[in-house]
Length: 323
Image (tube, rainbow, N blue to C red):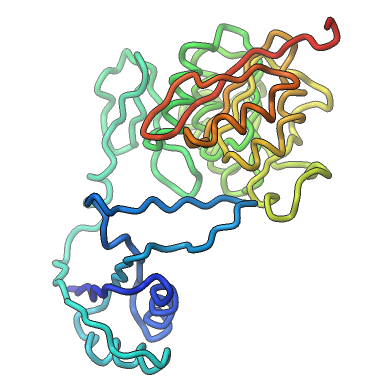
């Protein structure tokens, strides 16, 4: 079966509505892109829980709708414009040749080299270096394949920091990649927490695939959110259910987002033993100072490393009882 794309330049205030209308009228899929991508006018758009974002799309947006070959783009776009009571926008069409979509998708995910000796390898590839530290992970519903700068930064940090027998807590574990890496680096007791049941299931499966599944590596859902968490931030904040109450760890790593990290500061610091280490990511370079300030009562957090505008923050827990 062949397809075509309907490509429409749209203003920010109409792109979302136009996208919804095209889907309602039978488009197979619709995406909104930055029409100025890869130019000096490219506009980054970031949003996270608890942040008031004035616009979720770009000043100069591009709506791309995928249609079957028998759908008439003129008729579809006219119907969408009528539905929204807008003039019919200018557009172009692009033919999309039929392909082996599974093979094409797989070709976009090659093995990733991280740090000194880590390789993240999809199941359809052979490991480039069988003697390296190999993590077999396929792209899926849970965040964490090693391709995002924040995941890469945390993996590089763990590779340098984990010592044999260390206890590790991973808040917001996603695919389980960081917890699995910690286990492969020699950590002892490792706990991963995520609020997404699909992520917990995926993390369990990935641990088994990487042959590190054991009672010493546990993943679970949260028991309850802390009272300090606002409703706006709650959907991105994990809390611990599989970690024993009051348990502390040699290492705590949290690759989430800056707002949840600030809200969770006292809880996360409370999970780091005195002299233990913490790593935080999901933080843009411009957000580093305010995140560090939230942890200052317990830990002096500094930027450990920066990559593509994202940072990994780290520090050592002070023994406040001895102060």
